[in-house]
Amino acid sequence: MEETDKSRARFVSLQVCGEIDDPGGYHLVINTDNLPDALIVRLIGDALERSGLHRAEELHPRLFTETIVDQEGIVLSGEKCFETFRVVRCPVQHVAGAGDFAEKITVQDVLVFIVIDEEQPDRRCLSRFCHQ
Amino acid sequence: MEKHLRHHGGIAPRREVVKPPSLTISRQCGAGLHRLERPLLEYLDNNDHSPSQQNWALFDQSFIGRLIEENRLPRDHTPFFVEHAKFPVDPSLGERLNHPEGEWTFFHHSAAAIRKLCARGNALIVGRAGNFVTVDMPNTFHVRLVGGKNTRIDVAAKHHGMSLTEAT
Image (cartoon, rainbow over the protein chains, first blue to last red):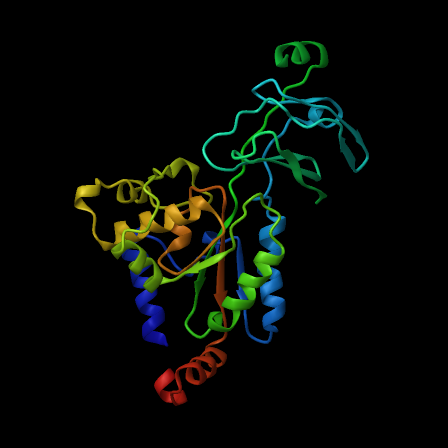
């Protein structure tokens, strides 16, 4: 065990000039002693989910109370009422790229996914619409 | 229309295409990752709110090696940007990961493979300095599993069918 750990530390030191045991290199460090596996799994999964990696960053705050317009001029009208964001209209003019095209807009604590199926370009839908 | 709304509504819209996340796991020997792999993949699949349609998949050293040998990786190369690093790294890491392809060692192939897999999203990378080689990728999340020495020796001994002395 000691040899394996030393070998891994050497690999990291040699190949990326890093320290494997430096907690600064991780979002989350978990001591697995005395924790049930199910809890560890949940800690990792929930931390990932809440980390913000699922969200777009730095959306302009005024977006929340106004109309969303994307770069192609597609309008998604919406209204923000406390924690509720209601999508009034879906985009109809977007030209999908290769393969399925999925985009996600984050509006504060609400996620909206727009999925466009290239094979059925008229079928655009909000695949998910959920509160964070 | 955007200009119009910007002008009248004072809107500064920004929309970004968000890549599905990926996860790197570093672990001390005996920290018990082998027990967690399957339930973690199931949990991630069941709680995946990203737009991706693909299931989560685990890539360890042997699987990554096989993908490289069989040339089954996406061709798109993701250049490394040290200035985008989420935590401080040695400046030489940029030169190392942007090394000319003709002079690559196995480490470079491995790092490139990890970056391609993480760029696609829903990849769980075990070991191989995954947190360092993807440190500039905003969709990656980095976890380290550690444990007390005695507990890890117990776990390693049971897992590999060794005596406690051998496992140490």
